[in-house]
Amino acid sequence: MRLPDQKYTLAASAAAWVACLAPQAYAQEAMYTEAATMPSPGTFVLREQVHYIKYGSHPVRGTRSTEDIKWEQSLSVGLWRGVALRITSPAVWRNDEFPAASGRDDQGDKGLEDFQAQFKWRVYQDDSGGIDTLRVALLGGATVASGDDHDFSSGSVNPEIGAVLTRVWDRHGFNQDLIYRFNTGGDREGNFGGDGVDDALCFNSAYLYRIAPSAYTAETTGSWYVTAEVNGLYETNGDTELRFSPGLMYEGRRWGFEVMAQLPLWHDLDERAELDLAIGIGFRLLF
Image 1 (spheres, one colour):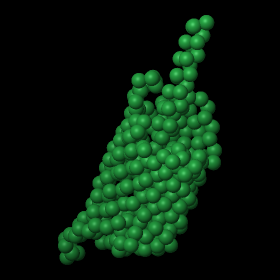
Image 2 (cartoon, one colour; image 1 turned 90 degrees about the vertical axis):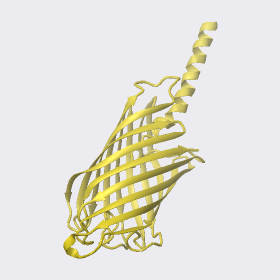
Image 3 (cartoon, helix red, strand yellow; image 1 turned 180 degrees about the horizontal axis):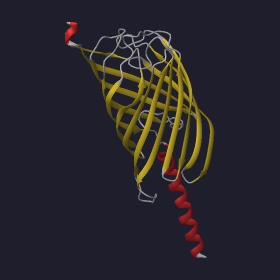
């Protein structure tokens, strides 16, 4: 009778370990695309990101190029099962370069972009075994004026609504989001994408592949992923842009790390600057 007992103990231990590891696997969220995953009730996720972004000429602003360093802080909390709230606060250091013929000197500025409050409500979940899952969540919230000037803040409240689908199977992960923003303020001069007077539609796709470990074991403490995203933004004035974002991500049980670049893929822009290059690095802490 000892052998069956031992088998039962091993099976129970494996099940408990998978249950502990599953939240880590379900947290597969790339840098620029939403995911239908969220912290459990009473759990917090602090996400710190720093981005370097270089834009080309801005047809309304009159600049030759613009460089931003953006520090973005977000805090997510699980309110109850299947519902979470995220608050985001971005600070920006900006340097504008003007054409020599304009007679204007290059200038630097800094400020706070609009805050964002977003609720996430999981409306569908199908866990097919192990870490494999299919989940759908609805997104709703708003960006809220930070109180800064029009270079950084819209001076208004701008509602957002959307949805996201997440699929995880074996070593693969996929996220697809769709978010519509009703812009009630802003201006064209301060718009670098989605923050102008026109409504904006964001559509982002992300693929993640777990490069290590090839399979989970009792010694596994974290996972490494390569990621690839296509990030799209359409504004109702017709401006449309696609970006390609390759990256690398680590997810542990209590913390995570991510690094990613953004490159121009395709654009048709008349009223805002096109992206030249973006690089981002981030850390996540679960507590």
